[in-house]
Image (cartoon, rainbow, N blue to C red; front, side, top):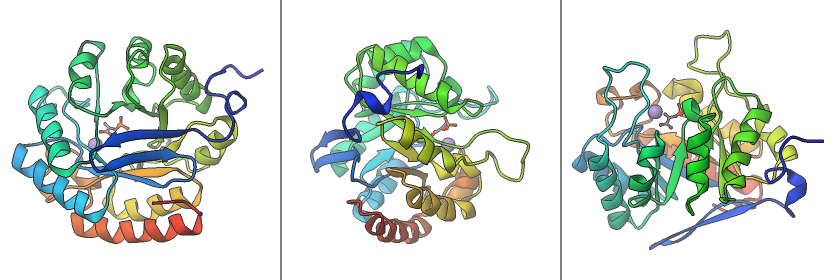
Length: 276
Ligand code: PEP
Ligand code: MN
């Protein structure tokens, strides 16, 4: 018997479709759709964020991302603008009409974050923070659950199960690369996980080629591979000036490079029979 129940394929007819309402319409993630999430790693300032948000909305992105609370390896690195960042995200949502997603790092911040954004993100480093999983499970917002960088697929699905068992069925899995012996890339992308998860679960699965590779030049090929492998979408870091970014500049695309990738994604989505 499988250790997970609510997340198991057998517990749901067909694939799950998650709907997020916004003033532009309903954004759909899952069954039959290819969803594109984009934005900078972190919200760095009001003008900067609103400008990239407008550019991405004009290109046709479905959901905006931006971290207000950043999990940084060093305590001396830029850790995000906190509530000020959340306010900027909420303003970007007003201006563009697009829903926004941000990471919640701590159970103590869940209520605060809920007041500003449409989708919560649990990051790789917190995938097994069980009290955080339960806390986001008690909300009514969709949750993007990133795979722990050393987590097996079973552990990842059990983390999803925590959120679902607490009452929230709207979980979106995100493959973001795992740690291996290879160190040319920041992580090693597990493309095979996309099809394995599809076999095991009805939940939507997206791929984050930015954190998975750590190198902007690899983002386009890996994003394409993800869609071809059957992912329900991609999450991509885009920055107006990657070399000036306060975090993850090396893996961020310029808006121009992102526009090129978006055209590829549209073509591939069509081949896969998915709406975009
Ligand atoms: C992020 O998406 O901003 C992030 C920190 O990613 P991860 O948790 O996958 O490292
Ligand atoms: Mn990042």
